[in-house]
Length: 295
Image (cartoon, rainbow, N blue to C red; front, side, top):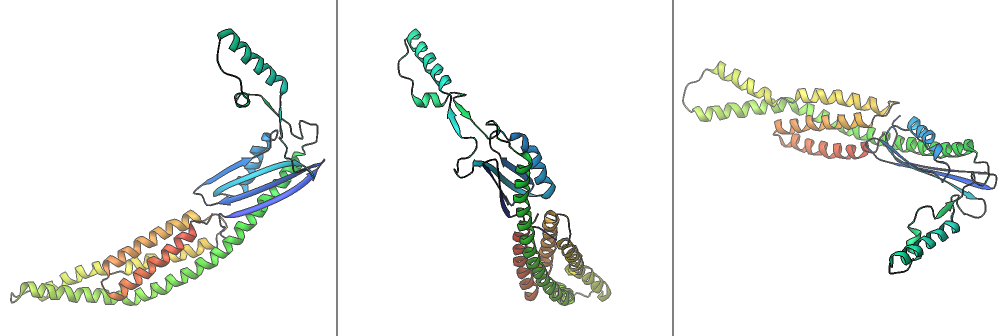
């Protein structure tokens, strides 16, 4: 069963007066790229949470956020507090520099805010509250599972749509197959007529003429392309049912089908063939757009 790369999930937990909340958003991406934001004091969990992502997803950009706030206050962990003692030392040092070197100007709050270490960050762990890493992991896994479930659900819709579009391509394939013999015969007829017009009254070897026209007429035969397209159909349908990620393989098959159809378009000069090729390429472009969102 194919999966979409679009998903969203969220989950919450409460413990020791704190509320944990996790959100996971996923969108299209050529590879798997995970970005995870955690509250201060919880960076040690980052690798294990990213490992959870890698185990559940193979492609897509994943943006995940975990927050911890005091229950009932809405204040997140990691609230900033000023280190007043350090701020005082900064001001004293600035004043000493000014007096010693005769520097102009005054120290402003903006100047102090740019200095390192001025803010103290407190977290539940630092306050002595049990961080309960297991609960953080559990909360994150629930949000991740919701995102995976959404990707599966979206994948089911994509599978249905692509199966219907594949049926449309099969119908066009049947039409082209019925026109294929006429294409060769028309090419042979036009070639004989052109040779006759060029030679005029000059006698020709009819057998050789027949052989030459047959040789060149084979170049207009689209049967090989139709056979390869039939093979691509089978592979495409199989990938729609595959358990492993199939997005890249499906994209490759679309490129191959497009190449075969372009060849058919260059060989066939009949109006019906040209119209079928145009319709095929339009349908193939819609399929390609859908496949870009498949894991």
